[in-house]
Length: 233
Length: 233
DNA sequence: AAACAAAATTGGTCTAGATGACTAAAAAAG
DNA sequence: CTTTTTTAGTCATCTAGACCAATTTTGTTT
Image (cartoon, rainbow over the protein chains, first blue to last red):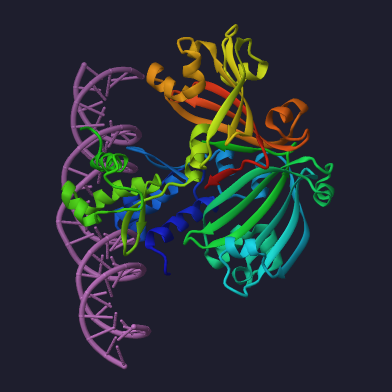
């Protein structure tokens, strides 16, 4: 493995939580014990824990221990998360209809945002996502072709992030979002079952891997009357 | 001094930057040298540096050194900040026109959001804020009357947060924002110099003091084509 | 059973090193 | 003069301890 030990441990700890080995509110083993288990110094282990604390995944209490944090919906909202999770958190049944899915030549914006080498193709997916069968957003997601060449269509469309982690051992780091307002074009209005000109919340998100490489560029338009962002500051 | 050494060093380093001893883009002394100067181990000094890096104040370059960062607009955006700062950061001249300003009876929403006791009045302010004389948003801000009874109108409209801290010794803690899209009504379109029905970014923000009391409820509508939120995650 | 005291546990801070990886500048080679 | 190699400086990671402060657990006394 190339990455630093503390990043590797960070990822393993996170998987323990995602696989429900450690549940929300539960206390995880003490630093000294984990350092023993992973056979590293306590300082190194603390680096891994610190990263998870910064992400809001763990919570420390002096004298008590380290606990799996009870993440709020809003916090998930702020993180790199999936539409599916968002809908479930809101008590709605998520569904998704793919409009298009193909390998193609990237646009200039995509080349710049994803820092694509000359000639590299991208996988571009166009989707309408719904909650309880009501369209919520229209989304265009673009990823470098090389990144997903070993993945099946199913693995990409249904749980891209999970596949990335489990099959390629690549982990999302940070992301930037730009949010503004726009109005629905005729075509998008049809997809979203609104009137042409209706207000939409427009978001572009550029997601990066932990090593800093951009790996996904998503442009999403949400129906203004059916969706809102909630941010905790 | 009670606080940990690395916090004390952190504060001293920050003062060096604020006092322009170290300028933007300039390289600061190497970790080993600073560790010597402060007479601490390198690990401790790195903790101080790390805190400043997390705050976006410093920037490390492997093999080169540590530099005073050129802080970006997006980072300021993420905090509880003022419109004025935002505009200045974007290189625009901020201005603001007050549409109305009066003590009045709160709406049901305001009572709930601000947790107002029965019979308490609120100060409600209606404003249009501009950058370089171009309207950017229309805003209605509401604060409990008791909170601002000792403040002058000038103190409230020009620098409310500063006045809160300096005169009442109250400090803003966290805030929640709800962001969605809507369209301009005839009246708001006039204020913002757009067409009726044009898309607006609608934000409601509820701000809390450090002790958890809500103290300000703001409803803002931004012109979609002139403003965007940038979020770093 | 309750109250208090002592001990054990846990995260927080700090030391004094070592080694590695990366960068930029200087030196050497062509 | 240009290119390549070397070298010195820098941050990144990691170790194996130490002591401190907050909290919980355990033991003892009342």
